[in-house]
Image (cartoon, rainbow, N blue to C red; front, side):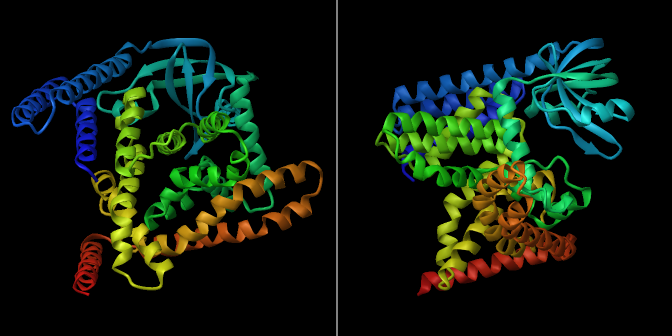
Length: 462
């Protein structure tokens, strides 16, 4: 990394602090940055133009963030009867069906029970439904967890109409792809099918609570959150077709594919980050100006948070960024300390680096993860990667074959994928039971760090 790269990374980190800070804290950060810039300009460490540009960007970030947050104070409350647009896929939460709807440009989370729950359970993203109920603001202190999803309050639904108006063409096309993937895996058991759709398109809405709990405890929950790995596999699968196009057309088609994949995966923060970074990387190569990875990560974060300041409150977004930074900075150095076999060194290096990258966010939000998660990732990630790479195109083909009435052929086609999905599920179950807690877990993490330091010292000595 060069000096300019560190300056960009520093500027983006400060921009994130300004975006999330309260008004007084934001002003203090701006003043401290202004003093630092003035000192750097005086000592000729920084040009005046760069200093002014940095301060203007930070000022814009503070204003942009305040404007985005002000919309949460303008939410309309009270009784409502009329059409609402479905924003998220229905998810079972205990005895309730949770869904997000949009009413007059305001988004509300709904926990429906009884007959309204039955009718909302089949709703698709983008469809409009007739609802009656009460719009309520969040209690003070509860709204921050909903910022990243632009949800402004709760809707206590009393009635849901039977009929639904169709979604926009783009959303319908995305839903057809999701339905086709699900039909392609219809020979799987229910749990395997929900895990498969989570791995390839991030659809974990119907996963059993036991599966969700096992993946969290084993440290494999990131596998069902669509990220850069899924995006890279999509581009790799389409590369034979994209390479045949002319340069300008290839740029437009690639950006279009990335945007469509973001829609298919329901615009999750992690996939927004991954698709934006992939798009910027592709554009930089296409115009003949390849960009170094850390600078690319910083520019991706800056661009996405400028477009949507509320991403600064998304845990998934920061975990995605942290894992990418960990892979960028630590994967190669960690892989070099293990001499052979090379494939194992690269796998362990990438796994440990990604774990260390997300560690600050995970510890702050969820507590210290189990050290056995490193072994679980080493065993599960390669197989999960193969499922992601081959599972989506095979599922689409199998779904088309099922539509033609050739179910047995679809079963044969998807059998290797089912084996891979079951392997990932077994690893999650086993290591969820082998997790360590408390001081035992801390001791194991200290042991991991001690081994890394010892291997690093031996490598540098040799």
